[in-house]
Amino acid sequence: MSAPGDGGSDGPVVAPDGGSAEGGASSELRSDGGTTAAATAAEGPTLERSANSFLGDVWTNFKRWNLKAVRNPFVLVVSLVQPIIFLVLFTQVFGNIAGRALPGGISYETYLVPAIAIQVSLAAAVTSGIGLVNDIEEGMFEKVLVSPMNRAAVFLGKTMAELLRIGIQICIILVLGVALGANVATGVLGALGIVAVGVLFSLWFIAFSNTLAVLTKDQESTIIAANLLQFPLLFLSSAFLPLEALPGWIQTVATLNPVTYGVDAARAIILDADVMTVIEVSLGYGGALDTVVPALAVLLALDLVLGAVAVYMLSRATSSKVQ
Image (tube, rainbow, N blue to C red):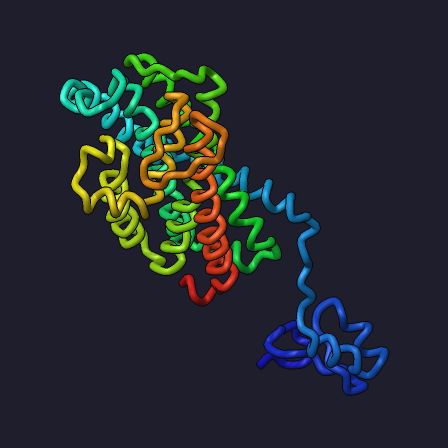
């Protein structure tokens, strides 16, 4: 221990009047005999809250995740390359065979493009959870948790950045599909509608992959679990062939598969026709809306349920649990 007056700092300095003083508070402590010092010590350090609003926190996280995506283009490229390979290979290799199962002389390119748009949404949504796990492993998630930012705003900002990326990737797929011979019967407005369907569809899987990330806290486990679901979801749906051409048990599974509703909604827009077969709903709109409205209602309900679960899981996460 340092001797009094030698300038050492091994312990609190004892004032002549009995009050303890430390650092810049020494004059205040001596004037009231140590009472203020005791109160300050009991209250602990004052936490300076963020002056950001909810929207400010959303914007901060939106910018951060966009910058992170730009600085790691490998993830962007990989999540886009796989659907492009599917689009090119399926149309060129299976186009002639699969096209025979399609009604009304629809080209397989036109039939397949909505499915690939939904696949892009699914693949990009998988990377959402992986990004969160990456944050957890690097300690960034822990820093966010101890910050005064709103937890829902953190999730919303991150999700909005991913939706922007998904929208751009679907646009690329649509342009490539048209170049290969696909026909968007509803024109540019329909193409924008397909992008909107893809974005709405992706929300439930983004929420799901982020929930997985919080539960597993491990990159490999999140990738395996997400990819384990990705391909069965795609193939056990109306994505690549009409359900009438598939076995009965696949038709049953497809009725419960969210991919079916996303693909049917996008396909109804590109064909400008009612294509839904898993549920028969006649809303009196006629044409594509008889598919689009019920399909979007199913997807919206799923988004709300899984989104609430993801926000709940992030809200309950504490810095100690993510170590």
